[in-house]
Image 1 (cartoon, rainbow, N blue to C red):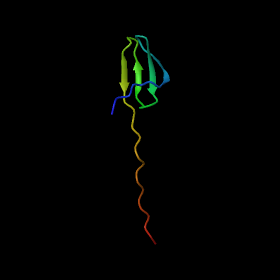
Image 2 (tube, rainbow, N blue to C red; image 1 turned 180 degrees about the vertical axis):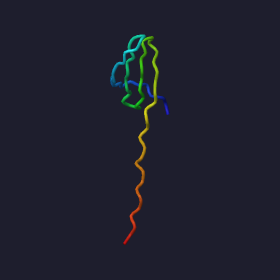
Image 3 (spheres, rainbow, N blue to C red; image 1 turned 120 degrees about the vertical axis):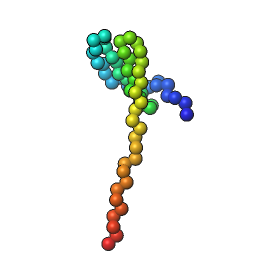
Image 4 (cartoon, rainbow, N blue to C red; image 1 turned 135 degrees about the vertical axis):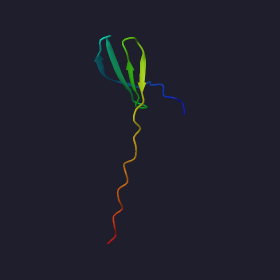
Length: 62
């Protein structure tokens, strides 16, 4: 499976730092959080994959 190209980004917000401003984006396709640092370095944090809800206990037949 090819890696996501992160073409559809959603702006999440900014965070002021001592060196400037970090800018946060979320990829709509894969859920990865992308952070652009003041030095123009891109950091990616993989999104959490949704899981199935836990199966409930089977009810006892009466």
